[in-house]
Image (cartoon, rainbow, N blue to C red):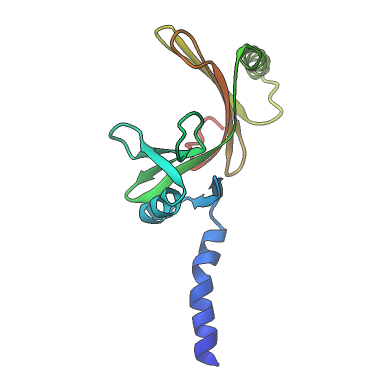
Length: 171
């Protein structure tokens, strides 16, 4: 009986240890901070296409046979998950861009006037004629990011992502 209890404790410990970690579901696979790279790559590659971002430790996850919308992404450091994100929605077209620009403008104005109800940060970046704007909503262990990309040679779209392990600064 003692050996059965010991075996049950050993089998349950990894789940208990991981329960305290924030988890993000990419497709139908749960990724948590500190998870081994081998476990993540094995779990995701069984069903999804995983694409490395240049020579980095950043990976983007797609449905097999498609590269139109990512399901999420994972970044590793020392063979452990440093950060992970799942794509909640990906919207394209002028209506989406107009909506996001209006939302960005409204929240940016609130932020500048000190009327923040929740903690958030707006960012704007330009790379030549390509423009990127994002709104990051910071929670205790998660960040919700709503972003747009627009300009020549850019698929104009709005992307909504949930992040864990993303550097939470300026909180």
